[in-house]
Image 1 (cartoon, rainbow, N blue to C red):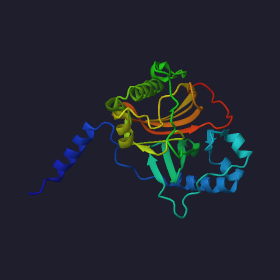
Image 2: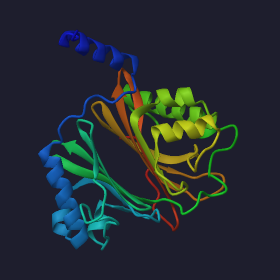
Image 3: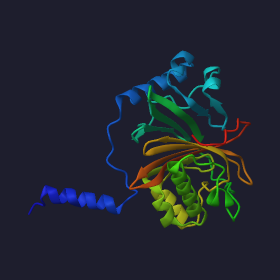
Image 4: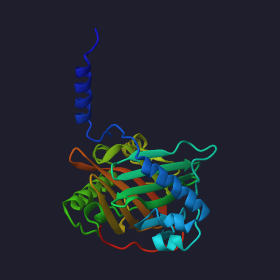
Length: 290
């Protein structure tokens, strides 16, 4: 006996309600952002400042694999080439995630991982973040982290929220870091989307959600641990947000971090975290929120 289609739909909806962190069905990518991303990679590869200038957000930041940062003006006045020129021979398919007014694009080649975050402004799609992360050849013996009390970032962070949305995201971030610090896998699960992915210079692999949960259950940080936040900014785009931050652990090298948050079922969950270890001097990020 065949199950009526209406019952199948109802069952699917019920399952989604029982899994609040689950990602909704993916929407088709806006052709405009796909074209903009292709043009960005081509212009960056050729160091075509004129073409790049039309694609960069006013708050754009470029973070290379050594953690060196460049803002919009610095990038246009310099010569920097992307670590991965995708698409190309032998490269895996580029991963895209459509979050409405935020588009996330990830490319991987061996130990090198590249993140491009696009945001929809009134004038069109603009690149907000370009970030490179090179995975460690071997897992470091010591993972940079906060002290055992974890005042920052578990209890407070140096970002003053400007509205209720930013306050909710900061609260979600503190909850996420607290669950990681205490190895509370169930609580960490509730603070992350099903498509969660993390890349860190202090880890020897990409960490998807199942892998990260398994590590937390075994009290293993796998190179990814809460670290004191020195400065940061929040960029809101409807039910999506981008968090850019600089972290300075008590021991170990500073980190440049990009996180993407999405509001699902009235709560904010983290879907992405890219963390690049600062190998050389890099400009500080302005403290505040936007």
